[in-house]
Structure formats: structure tokens, C-alpha cells
Length: 114
Length: 111
Image 1 (cartoon, chains in turn blue, red):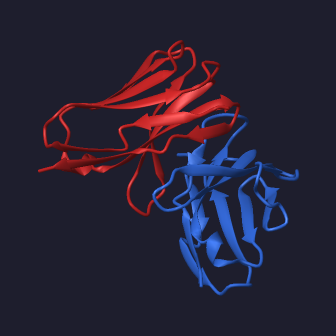
Image 2 (tube, one colour):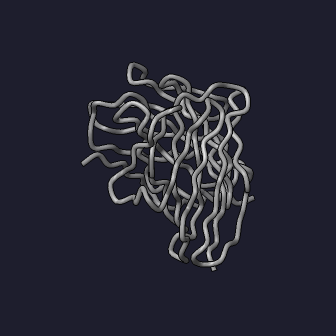
């Protein structure tokens, strides 16, 4: 149980365009979802936390107008990278939890901006 | 500032050897600590979760310990195998739901 999926698994987009990444909890209701970013050879850094039906809480240094997070249902959260630039190229990983329990992680999405 | 540090950054051992990975954290007031495995280009696989009230957890050849007073955790891998080669990440939950990750230890087990 406790499976989290992400789509797409990898995406290439041109500089200036926007790209949406989906995170789904397949077999449980995710009251909270988290978005992390991982640059090459580095560890995961939390970007934002979202509770279903509420606005996301962003970590210091993360631009909320650039990384739009929507958590409209208990099984789906989306991260939209707006006006993407090459420096946004990274590995984006989501996780989901139910009422403060353990976080379950998705397989990640590799974003490359050309 | 709440930080998580892992030592060593990389480790190479021959197959069959027992090994220990270290994780240290700056604040003893934690909710839990978790060890993950990450294969290149992949997501995270949870290995062991230790709640604040626990001192250790075991799963197969893996044993994780937690000493909050000293701000340390260790992941012990017995009888290492080439399939254990991966990056091992330690993550600490200082604030409910907010995991802070260490930089990871990249392990290579040579056949």
C-alpha cells in the first residue's frame, strides 16, 4: 500500500514555457503533499507543503509565483513551473501523507529546460 | 539552524563486509528519523523509520539506531551485497511533516 505516482517521469521543455507535474496518491487520501527539488549530486530540498483545499506554504527562497502548487483533491497535487529557465532543470519529487503520518515518496520527475 | 549531516560522503567496500553509515543532526527535539535508499536517477525507497521514542529499528540486514541526546543515528548494513550499491539518505523530521535531508552517502559494494 501507500503508493505515490508522478507524471511525467521526465520532460524537456523550452526556456520560457510552463510545465505541469502531477503527483497522485493511488491508494490513500493525502491530506498533505510535499514538493522537493534535487539538483545533481545534492540532496532533497523541500520547496513547499500543501494541504488539500488550502494554499501551499513555500519554503524560504522558493518563488511562489514561479512554482504554482495546486492541491485540489485528496489524491492529486500539481506543480507548475512557469516561465521555465535552464536553472530550473532539476529532479522534482513529491511525497504524500495522511494526517501527519509517514511521508510516501513518488518516483520523481526529471525536468530539463533547454 | 536545523541541519543534517552524513558521513562519509562516499564509501566503497568489498562484498560481504559489514558497514556503518552515520547521520548527525543539530537539534535533539525531533519527531522521527528516516533512512532512505536512492538509486541513480530514481526516487526514494524508505528503509527504516525510527520514531522519537524508539532507539532502533531492524529490517532484514539493516539496523538503524537513534540517539537523540547526542544527535546521532547509524545505519548498519550486514553482509553487504553489490545490490546494496546506492545512495543512502538520512532525513529528520524536526517539525511535523517537514523533513530535512542529509547530503547522503554513496555506497559501492564491489563483487
